[in-house]
Image (cartoon, rainbow, N blue to C red; front, top):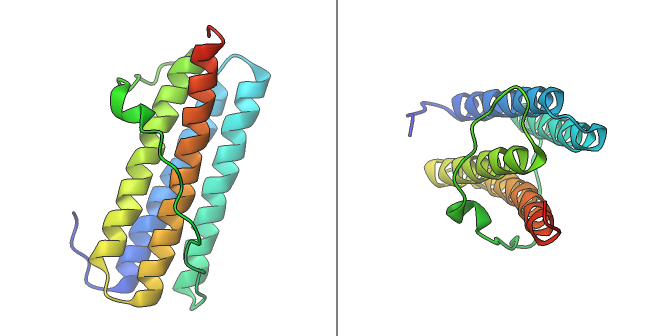
Length: 151
């Protein structure tokens, strides 16, 4: 993991990842064929923008409450090959990409929490890790439902 010399550097790094996630979901929304799929990914783009705002607030001195509960992990993404992003993806492929993206975001925030000494910043990253875990779970449940219904 990259070395940081200050809390601001860690926060800037995390903010940049949220900007990238927002752009990723916005791009993915433009690639899918069905309007309801577009809406799902647009909603996720908004959530990632919300994460960015939370991090920016922390940077100005606000604190986030720690996560109250641990999110269930179905671990489906551990057994699914990561799909390639392509211009016209079907829903199953888009879900595969999204599951892997959220898993990586969860791991990033967990690693960042382990890399900082400040308790408030650690709690912030752990709270964001749980939010990313929630996103991943939503995609895993949708993926499982899709497979059960025959795609």
